[in-house]
Image (cartoon, rainbow, N blue to C red; front, side, top):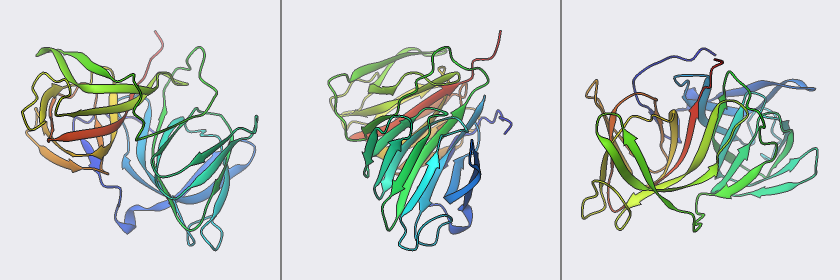
Length: 280
């Protein structure tokens, strides 16, 4: 897949139109071509490397599924590092090399490094997940080889104010965040949870909790699953304005200037930031 620089915010709902779902086919090392479940792509590319995001689902009529909708498959995320969040259903994921098992339920977040083979055992009747897959041009020195499972409702003590510097507007404070993963197999692959609202830090927070902030994503492309609240995004160059609600996917391009408006009283998102590290 060739990356395309397109200064336009990507966006879509977690309930794509029926014609947008297609069988998910990939080449699994040692097993060859596999077809399991269906996929709908919301973000087809980023500004560098290979970046895609969307939804995957399975049920009684899905490719590879059992008649009752349960589903078993071997998957090593060969297309790149994957971060996934369970939307519907439950499953057990087992790391084939170690036997380590993880139970996934709605809200579970799975951070799956590229090349780590696991077996998915999906319970009937239905299952849906949100996913972001990233593959850069250059392997990192010591890529993580372990799965990590967290949850969108985690509330660790490590929430920190999000400080960053906008190229034109200078230092900003916009909400608070914590990290889920801070390294990837290729290039930059960061993920975490962010929130804003009443009583939460922000350079421009209204009394009702609405946060308005300029943003260009200098750390890389950002792909978002909006977990709660409502967001308005104003694209500076084109003037285009888009609106998003909880459950929607938002894709921001590195280098594109926008104004991000989180409506009060609170907004929360699951974010992934990716950036290709090209050879010098």
